[in-house]
Image (cartoon, rainbow, N blue to C red; front, side):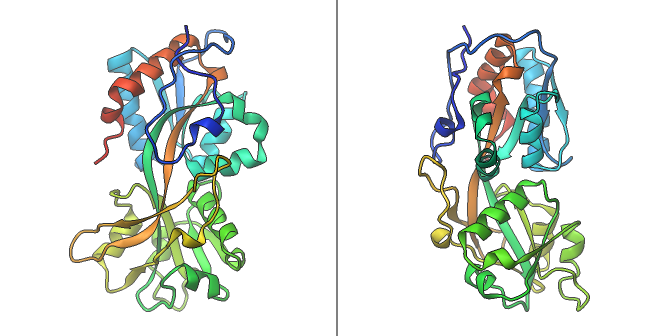
Length: 294
């Protein structure tokens, strides 16, 4: 019998607790499916690297072939997973991106199963060292502020939309999409197209933008973010964001910012019983190989 419960995301997306490992309930068989296809993220990014580790572990530990596809981020991952014409049946995504998407597509909830909680994803907003933008109140009060984000379909874009909806006045901030590292390197120029850039990734990950800011701490500042002003919550009442103080390499100060969970979701209608059982065992017994906490 299929070891994955047919549960809605309402049950799955709980507040920062133990991972959910469903064990049994059949919701209807599907015809023989192709190999498991996972939509991850940009090549070389945190989700991409985790997907490649999952691919290796699935082959060695479960005899399960997994194809990894790059993507622009969380929203595209969800859309492909839920698109009946797409072969994608697994997706990495942020909790806020899942909430955002399902708010507009509530009929899709019943197709999804949560396979695993994949840890924290944290917001990094970087501005110039001389900028007056120091915290979320400054973001609220600033006039004609421009923030750089890599892609409109990325989880970063969704996170910004949620943040903006939670603080009146932030909805007038202009978003400029494109190469955030290149935009960041121009922050101290009068010709800069943005006033800050924003990335989202694991707390200990060092994106090119964060690494560049740490290596040039005299030129850049991390904007402090506090969840007291971000009141959005999942439909089960748990808060989407939480404040964390992230340690940075010496001599840099800790960064106070917002974090949310990432999740691995499956479209149960695109997986055979055998595939679902193998995936269940894989995340239950070998998850630390796929997504180590450090």
